[in-house]
Length: 156
Image (cartoon, rainbow, N blue to C red):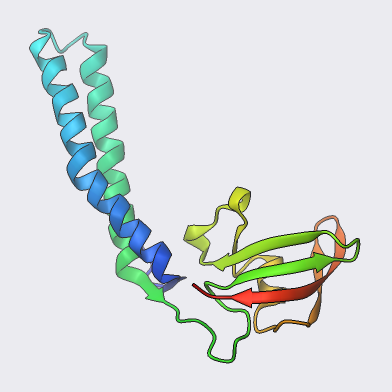
């Protein structure tokens, strides 16, 4: 696997650590109990429950390795000292029709579009990077060009 650094916010890093801890403790224990009950049922050659438990164990261990690798490569980016938009910024913008939208600029592994958490590498993220309150930006999107005015920039 590549050793390329992954930029992320402190909150994203902490959330990955929480997930890793959950997978290593709670989830492993749940799978172990499930596997134990499948073993207690007897014949493993035709045990769908045992096969399911082994599959869950494999998926869990794979996810643990993946998260450990992400955390190992993580580069936590501090907020932009100039007050401009950077990783971790919560941004309120208004489009040309006057519709306001809230975005939070996050690293690629933290994206949650349904909750307004967009990647700093996305077209909107790239266009907003470094901008300040009052700035206008043009964003090239698959459906055409959109213009946004930055109404506010906040960091937690």
